Amino acid sequence: METRELTCIGCPMGCQLKVQIDHGQATEIAGNTCNRGEVYARKEVTNPTRIVTSTVTVEGGSHAVVSVKTSRDIPKDKIFEIIQEIKEVKVQAPVHIGDAIVSNVAGTGADIVATKEVK
Ligand code: SF4
Image (cartoon, rainbow, N blue to C red; front, top):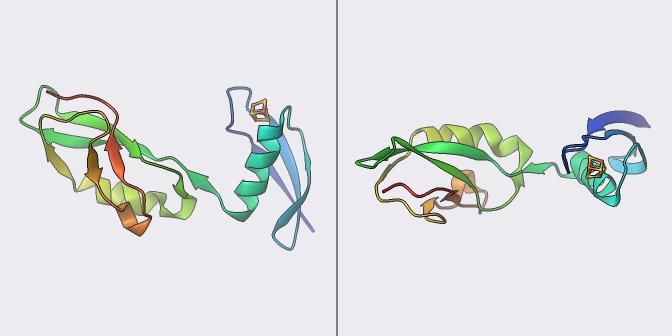
């Protein structure tokens, strides 16, 4: 039996969670104010995932970079690989919100999509 302390990232309250873990499964969760904290804690101890946000270089545009994010949650242990892959990318203006800048980033099945317009 192991105990882990986590900070819930479900909202700005940042509840401090205490999770009892037995054989890789959350058996008891305390400290959450709402059900989202429990869902987060269970996922975090079995299959932690995140949305990754970053920026990509834009050539010939009104701004030098465009903000981007993964199209869905990706495994937490892929974050570094994704950031490395994004660092190499350059995109030609114009860029539109929702444009897929990188497909299947780091083999995760997620795309890197633009979250801003660059003319
Ligand atoms: S447990 Fe609920 S109230 Fe607390 S930080 Fe998570 S989402 Fe917010």
